Amino acid sequence: MTFIQTDILPPNQQYAKIKSPHELDLEAICVFVATGFFMGADSYWKDEVCLLPGHNHSLDAAGFLIDSKPWFEWHYSPREFSFEAILDEYIQLLTTITKEQVGERPVILPLSGGLDSRSQALILKGFDNPVHAFSYAFQGGYPEHQIAKHIAGVCGFGFESFTIKPGYLWDCIKDLAQINGCYSEFTHPRQMAILPELQAMTGVFSLGHWGDVLFDRGASEQTTEADIIPLLFKKMVKPKGLELAEQLWQHWDLAGTFKDYLVGRIETDLSALAIDNVSAKVRAYKTSQWAHRWTTTNLSVFAAAHPISLPYYDDRMLQFICTVPEAYLADRRLQIAHLQQDATLSRIVWQDHRPFNLRNYGYNKAPYNLPYRVWHKLQREVQAVMGRSYVQRNWELQFLGAENDKALKDSIFNSAFNTFIPKSLVAETYQHFLKTDPIHYAHPISMLLTLSAWHKNTASVL
Image 1 (tube, rainbow, N blue to C red):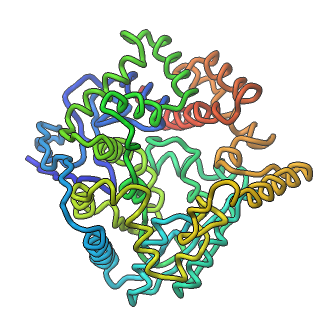
Image 2 (cartoon, one colour; image 1 turned 45 degrees about the horizontal axis):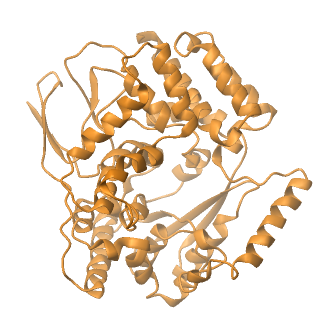
Image 3 (cartoon, rainbow, N blue to C red; image 1 turned 90 degrees about the vertical axis):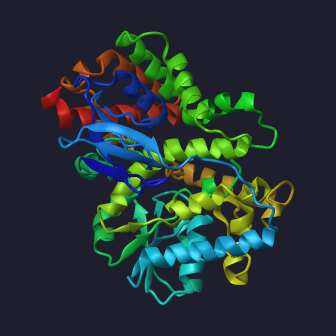
């Protein structure tokens, strides 16, 4: 007998066998196509499950899952403390967790123009650990690394910047398929483009994933209990992913309708959350579902280079969140107040509110932001006239252009793969991507690419 206790938000996923037919879980795959991640304990197979977070699991001697029982229940138990008291507690907790996780080792810090990694930078600035920060930007896109470089300079960290270039995926797609098991679509983990450079660094990663969800509203104050399922459905489901999932549901002749099935799954999982506050309930749902099955999946790329540490994933941080009044979490109040304690760091541009910073972001509205918006639009238009389109999304580097197109078609128009996903559906989606709506059809194209890589790796057992 083996016992496994999973964290509230585990930094990696563990799978176990169950006594069920070794068949594809087609319903689960349809959810994956629509959302970009698997839900709950789902996997590609009916006889394999992902161990749920916050549970105690019992496995028999042969490795089959016998039982799973929760050791943690999400809750909302706000304490009647002042904002200043909660802020002090948050800073101390983030400091303690970060120090325990990194120990005396050198730290590798991915820096962005947002708040999570900047909060980590402020904490690490006070440690004796050597810190090497890095950032990246899309070739032809917004130079995010310039903000990161400024932050690193203020903190006294070493710094490297990287440019994510077009077509990088095709040189590393086999490695990515092995690293993440094809449990996440391939357009997101841009760190794959610089994996050799990351591997050449020394230390432990300190990653700020999921801080932006924990330290913000789960839902607006106007959201009612009746609004939760439509809200989650809208947030989870990519419209053209839904379209392809419904086509596959019909092709595989599955019972009922896909949308009813997915709504039913959301309803079931929500019913397990005994939380009255709507915002807290949505945050708990998102954390137990797509943080665990989407965000965590992509952490595997960092883990392929060096050990990872995640202060916002720590059980103590998640238990702390359950006790913080929603008004203190809303609008990133705690993180902003923490960062405002450092006058220099807080005056560096906040990427989501550029060109404003953490002291004047309230002016990011008309008419104050109009000069920047006009200038930024003019820059994009000049770039387009010069034949250099402005890159905002990772898939633009991977799918646009003749060489990318050839590599993409070689993967998804493949006779072996098309025994699994019909060529007619692939062709329809591909033509929509080319001619109708590339922005929204990029998701199902990416899902088809991911499934083709998975199929290639597992064809021998299908």
